[in-house]
Image 1 (cartoon, rainbow, N blue to C red):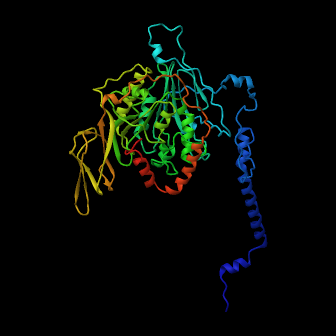
Image 2 (image 1 turned 90 degrees about the horizontal axis):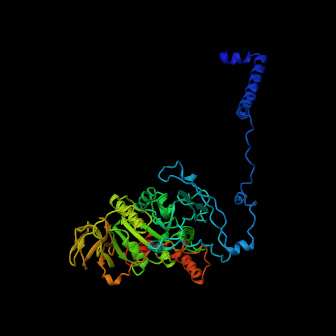
Image 3 (image 1 turned 60 degrees about the vertical axis):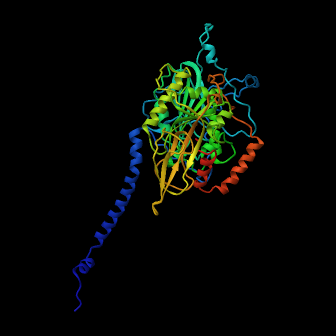
Length: 524
């Protein structure tokens, strides 16, 4: 006998009317689901009382046009008479901020649109009338009228006197939405005076300068300041994000100043920063640390043949000074060649924050501000530090692990033991002894070294006759270099050489040798 399951029997006896009802319920549920999916849109419109804007239908493969500048169509074109007189176009005024107050998001910074690259040599931007020489203000004769501070025009904004604000600089060739703008802190004092620029993290792994600029800028009072201070805590934002000394293209930004608008990526970034920020300065302090696991005694590096640079170095209090013109392509050397007296302040090691180095640097910059007549506060120092006109590196002759017997700032004599290099495999120890009388200005931290590694930087004291007499730094010219500069044949050739060098320099090891061996030290 063939048996059937109860389920089979019940299925056969299922009424047709019940099947029709089930189908009707399923269709109703589907319709109800569609209605519920559409309901949020309708409910939002009913709650807000206004229709929700619809997204624009775009062709995603079409390039985006540049956003139109606000009110650009309403602005009348300047006539030829106005251009001949060199009248300045009005700029939006920067907001007066409390710089020491935290902000929620960096994206809220007012980013300025970079200027388009000129197709032909452009006329230099009109320069404001120069401020009076500070020496003239110190004469016995009373001035006819008290000089008034002037607004500072920078990065597409006008910073009025007695104003502290936060602007932003961004190189023109960056990917939109990929690189964040670099903050530029500005304090324009209520009284006239020079404009001092503080730059840090040109090498992205040097942290001491970032903290130094923060402490100095956030403690300035615009109501009592004479002149202006521009602080850029992180110039190389690309390297800072990666914890690297270099840019993303593995170039050392501090070997490409003053830059070239049609050169490599590093050259274009250097050009943009040099002409949009540094050109507004009367003096610059560029903050650095040692490189590649080396640390530096707080020290100033500058061309002591330049009287204005000597004035800056003598205004830092008890800080070691080392004579050096700077390697070609450094920010310091390019600024000096453009007529802006500049020094490098070296302190500490990369990748770490060293409180003694930061404190010394902050104290030195505040003393400089006092000596330039920009602030009234004065910091007392001990005895002046000696000036070193020459220096030399003592190098490891063998590879191994280096163990130092000396400390930063220690005076050494010829023949003194500086340290030993121990081979961990053979246990052979090689001594490094000083070949000069001098002082340890920089040294390698205990680490594995290769033969030829620069281990100890010894400063040799300079005779006084080699140092130029100091000369005051004043606001004689607000803008030392034009905003745009025509390319020369030499610059064109330099750009070609940069492209050629890209094929040769394929790694950071090559870049390290270029930066460290250029003038025999880890300069800047």
